[in-house]
Length: 278
Image (tube, rainbow, N blue to C red; front, side):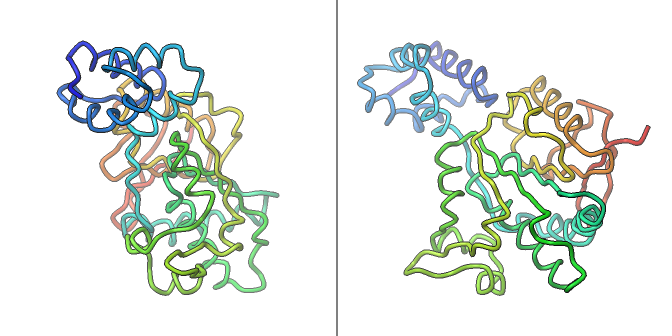
C-alpha cells in the first residue's frame, strides 16, 4: 500500500504530536512497512483514511500505531562499559543511599521489553550478596520501568523470554542463577522480578507524578525525538533527579546543546551524568 507525500506528512505529524517520535523525511517506506497491516485491519483504503480514523480515536488504534512505529531494540547488560560503570560506581552509591533513606528509587525510562531494568536488578542483587549480612534490605530498592509501547510493557511484565531473546547479551552464570526454564521459555525469578514495576508511559507527559529518583536511565531513545522535545525531557529528568543522583543516556547521546544542568563523568569508558552542583 503506497503512501503519498501528503499522507506521509499527516502520519508523521500525528506520531510526533502524540508520541514524540520524529520520523525523518524520506522514510515513507518505514511508515508503509509498519502500518499497512493496521490500515487493512481497520478497513481503510489508503493512509488518509487511517489518519482520519486516528484523529477520532480515543486510544486503542493510536496505541497500535505508536506500538508499530516504536523501535524496541534492546539487550541484556547493554554496553559492557556501561554495565561496568554501573557496577563499580552507581550501585555502590545506591547502596550507600539505602543506609540513610527509607527507599532508593531507580527509573528505566525507556525499558522496552524489560531487559534493562532486570539487568540492573541482577547487578544490584549481586552487589548485595557480596556485602553479605550487612547489606541493606532488598525491599529498600524499587525500579520503575516505563515504555510508550503497550506490547513491550506486556512482555516485560510477564518476565518470560525466548531462547533468542536470552541469547542477546545474557551472561551464562546469570541465566542459571536468576532464571527458571520452562520448556523453551526462560522466566525471571521472583526475587528479581519483584524489584521492578512496569508501566506504560509517554515521555512527552509530566514526570512529576513519578517523584524523585536516585538513578535515571533514559538510554537510546532521545535520538528518535525532535530537538525541542529532547530539551524538555532533559529538563524534566533534572527536576526529578536527586541532587547527588546519576543519569545514564545512550553512548551516542549528550545533553550538551540542550541544557547545562548536568556534568559528565567518565567511568571505565562510559559517560554518566550528574546534576551540576550550585
